Image 1 (tube, helix red, strand yellow):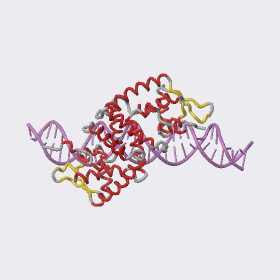
Image 2: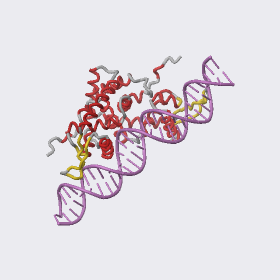
Image 3: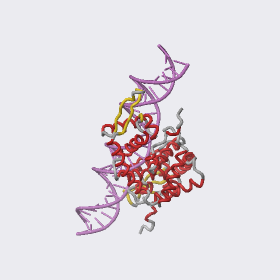
Image 4: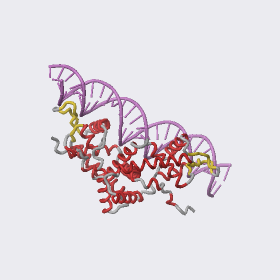
Length: 152
Length: 152
DNA sequence: GGACTGCGTTGGGAAACCCAACGTTGTGAG
DNA sequence: CTCACAACGTTGGGTTTCCCAACGCAGTCC
């Protein structure tokens, strides 16, 4: 009967907006992610990846690197600390700061989360060839470059 | 002093994730949008665009077309109705449904929002050439196609 | 020493997403 | 014709992300 089964498409005005597309891709990515891990693991992943790559950081630096607000970083770090994945100690050289350091458990958790993220990623990009995935990645990276110095 | 000013980059593990990129692009898009209109106008735009393109729809159909939850559609439609942008009446043929119809004010509001969305879009994609924008749009569209039949 | 700034924390608001329940209304099977 | 079932709209709730504002404390620069 319904000769146009997949005519359930969003309106053209929406499909024309790249920002709407990006939002949809992001949402679907979150759904794929949620199938492999709790959503909070995304923030954990970001923080742990930053600590692994750049070494001990203050929470403010973490926020700047990840584009997160200070208060959100505070919450994430507290959660990770309570989970035993990192250590938080006042910086001896600047006692305003908390020096945040990953430990072994954190690195293990990071790898585990990376594996799950890769699975979600593969599902998200299922419709694209390897070349197309590379192109998409490059274009998104270039679009983001123009907004490096945004508020955070 | 700081020889690596733009070394404030997010960690490589994050930059490698297309889903993280898409999320960032989406967030920046929201920021650009917020500079031109209240954020709620995005949902308004989606609903009005669907009504304009497909004619009167039930709220459930709106949700399916836009990928929104029924309760969220309910709220948006209520807001738009209170703003005088659409009419909501029980479907005579199926009294479970609300038939939602755009009116003239709604169409005007749609065009106004479209103009603001275009401005935000231009700012979001400032770093890309026209060709790159086209490519990015096509790749995102293709990636989304593979997830047409998702939960909603 | 005093103004200024940065840090971490707390509290809060707005928006999107998702789930569960309820009463109402159609539909289809027995 | 009933009765079970499914769809609709509504309400309420929970979670996450992104912001903004304020506070007390610590460093910096004149």
